[in-house]
Image (cartoon, rainbow over all chains, first blue to last red; front, side, top):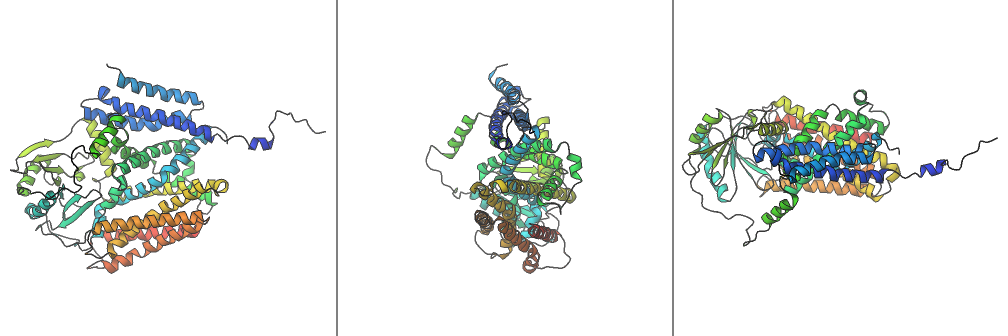
Length: 105
Length: 488
């Protein structure tokens, strides 16, 4: 006697038609890119305010941090299991960088 | 496809790596060549004798009339002093595309008769601008950022098997497996070098991506400088009378009291000052410390040295990237590491195409991608060898000879890319790869006979070895490309 196949179980054919996550990953990558780029830009922009010494030195320091931070933030925003968690981490860094530019201290 | 960290990173690694990889292949290849730009200039000017006399500061004054001519044309010329790498005085200026160089005898100051050439600095300029000015710099800086992302995702993918994969090289395994082994073996041992180059290279051009002002202001400034509000500015500055320059020997002597004996690298002539700058070979810090003199009465205007810790860090990054302070051994190590970087991009691009050929091989986008890969991976070395061939074949008296060499380079590259695209679109990519790799092998193999046939005063055992080294590298490249064409 053949076992009964429940109707909810996806057949091999329908499983092969499962949508590829590539489209979702593309959006995640674009979001990560936007967040990482914004953070890096505002880190450079704000560095004369919080950076060391002369404006020239502070700008260089900001660019050093921005270039190191960009790939890390993009990978964090894209790589975490939950898309929301990665975006929140990168977004928080972004927000701090923006606040460092806009707030007067 | 499962949604795991490894698959996500694999997807990012593949797409970002392929998109930037074709540009980065050329950047790493030109970086390798730029490592020996001075030596390549000597190969490209074979009339210049290999040995010369000791440097005499009085010889500088014999170069001054030529300097004044260039200043009158609105250029900013500079004289590079003799060094261990290059025993000649050289008068140089940047024509908007590349540094043009004229050699002078360091003892007498007499101009040496040598063919005009774009020289080894052609590859240096190509390395960071692709001869497209600020746009090229921006594209390459973007590619540098993409490389950092690709490296990060690649490390995450291979984290578990990083060490075990290193010991695996199976050149006779299935093609995909073999290419993957090549990719890992070419990248993992050289990761510190590649990360250093990616970070420092992107940092050097950071102002193009992350300017210290908002993008709106930055764009406004760009338009403000490119569109003058006043009357139209002529493209070429008109010739203007230039006051006679003071003797350079006393200036050099006074500058050496500040910079140290034998520490002067070059003398730059600006409208308001003469800059005597420290040699880049003085140490790992690329300080560009300089003493400025008045061009009227040669009194000291100022001494410029940026001593802060941040500036020192920047100078160290610059110094490590340019590696002008290193000896020949370290330069060869840089060359090998850069070449392995280029192999990493080439093998990565090949893997990307192989993995998608079955599913997407019929699509036009795939065909174009493969055509571009052929044009980049095979076409760029062909164009490079074409440049060397043009240097020896073009008539010595040809007007605008340096431009002609550059035009040959780009024409060969464009032809190669078009041929690659054609073969790929006609569903014969393997034929495209094979033909171009065979062309590369032939050009490389025949470079030595060409060098022997066209170099004046050739001897079997000669000093220096720049000719032998260049010919040997071309020969090795030819043998490798022949073997790859055979195995395709």
